[in-house]
Image (tube, rainbow, N blue to C red; front, side, top):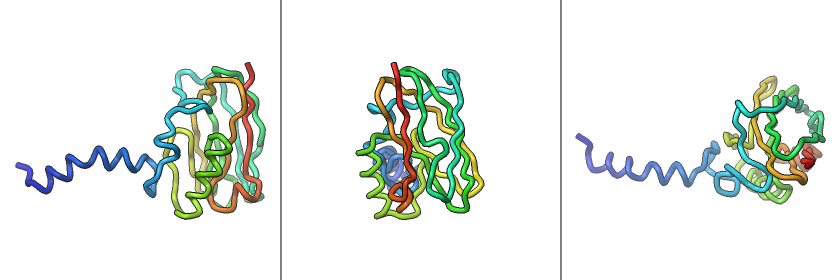
Amino acid sequence: MKTPIIRLLLSALPALTTAAGSHHGGHAMHGNQQASAVGTPGKAADVTRTVEIKMNDSMRFVPDAITVKAGETIRFFIRNNGKLPHELVIGSIAELKEHAEMMRKMPGMEHDEPNMITLKPGQRGGLVWKFDQPGSVDFACLIPGHMEAGMIGKVVVSR
């Protein structure tokens, strides 16, 4: 039998989970960032190709420019070759700058969203993202100071 306090906590849990998003540290990038003008989370079964991206302590992504076709689903295989933590966040430049400002106010935050990955030194991981429409999409490391030091890249989405 559940006590009134446990029932209250259980009833509030869905709202608390939604409000926090799935960031460690309790904020979400533009809601839940499940879909936006920059694309949507991809499905592994729909991956058309894999692109390897390396991150390093010279505050660069290698490569920092990628070309894909509209409708293509890409698996990004991301490797942190540095001695510092780094991350890759896909978004518009406006979203990235706004989120970077939030990161300065909440240092130590890690990401766990479909368009974001945080990797410790030596770690590797992946993202699957579908690029829905032609244009350009940005990606950056939003750890305070990293984007400002040049850790930013661009995906050109062609027709």
